[in-house]
Each structure stands twice: as structure tokens, then as C-alpha cells.
Length: 305
Image (cartoon, rainbow, N blue to C red; front, top):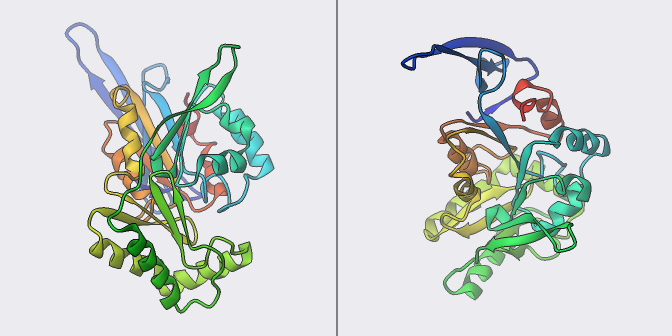
């Protein structure tokens, strides 16, 4: 369920009866709603009050665990580090692997089960060394391909030149593993310039219009809004939704939870949110800031291991 969790929640319980040939087993399903009466998530408990399913947590980074392009808040970092102990936690971000490590810090990332960077086009997992220590290893990476790349990148530059936005600085696209990140304001923009463009884009919906035009012209590629000021470009199928296949053997007996800030289409969290909602037990929760995520960690859904 891709719903925003409001400041107030209330619970509704359903009792589920299961009748095998001999035993009677009673499960309780707890539905949690927000202040707008939208169901945010549900949990299944057995008669002892223990959650039936193991949990797998997937988190976006920018706007979800950190301010966009910034490092994680120090107090939240300590709280998140304590919370994630003993849990199956993964990162799914459009950012590069080095940037994710820099934003979240080694202490947090070293406790994680895995990191899907660049929209899931690269997957890193901890593997033990001969000396007994674990280090991050690249498990796979995808490649971004486009016909006539020089013409394609020239086309992106024309969108920059034709934009009415006043401040443009530095390079405007960055080639990452399996994807391209594109920005009108430019990669060298200050935080204040990024904020100004975000306000401009909110009013004029420039990125949404560019994504629609490029999507129509290049059917072999996907274009989505990523982060606060940029757009992500990748080959069809190489979006965040691809990471769900790595949990295919766990879907029957695990509850998958994804938290992101760009869940509505055409945000770059949309594909993974939809994939999670199609799982037998899955919830996608939209947040607006890392403070929303901090509040989420105190709810029942995140108390399970």
C-alpha cells in the first residue's frame, strides 16, 4: 500500500481463522490507518502476539534517510543504527555506491545486508575475507546503452539551453552504473540554488514535462523524476523495481517493506513501490522527509525483526 503515514494512526483488527485437519489456529491481522483514513500497512500476528512473517526492510536514501545530497542527521544516525541491529535492511538508491557510504556512514552501512545503488543497477553485498573480516563486494552491475549516444546527450543539453530557469552551473548529466542522472540546474549547484530550482520546478513542473517528452521519443528507455532537482534515465526494466527479483525465494514467508519519498508516478521510487505491493506480503510507505522515517521506526511495523 503506497500511502503516506500521517501524524495520527489508529488500528483495526481482523481475526483470521485457519482450519487444518486437526488444529485450529487463530491469526490476528492488524490494519494501521493514517489520519486521512488511508490504510498504511498491515501486520499478521499469531495467538501469542508474535508476528508471523520475517521482515525485510528496503530504504531509499535522499529525502528518506537524509536531506537530498546531504549526510544523515547525527542523532537519527544513532537511532537508525540501534534500530537496524538484527534486522534485514537494504538500501535501494539512485545514487552511486561511494556517495551512499558517504551519506550514511560506514557504521550504518556495515550493518546492512546489502546496497542496491544506481536504481538497482549495481548490487553490493558484504563477503568475508580470508582474515575473517567482511568487505563490500560488487555482485553485479548493468550497463546503460542508447543508440547514437552523442546525439542523445546533445539532446539533453538542448533541454538545458531551452529551459527558462535562470541559474545553470557545471555538468548537467552524470553517467552512473546502468543509468544517467540529468539535471537542469547542474551538478555544481549550491544547496541554495538547488532549493530555488526545486521551488521553480514545483511551480512549473519542468521535470515532469521533460520526462514526458523524452519518454515518448525514446521508447527503449525509461525517464523518471529522481531526487529534488534531477531526472534518472535507464534502459527499460532497469529501474528500482528490478531488485525485488533478488528476494523471490523469500516472498512467501517474508513481509517486504519499502520506504521512499518519490513513490507517486513518475517518481523514481514508483516501480519498486508497485513491485512490493504485488508481493504476497508487501507495503510501500511514502515519506516526505527523514523526520517522517524517524517517526516510522517507532511504529509496530518497524518493531518486528
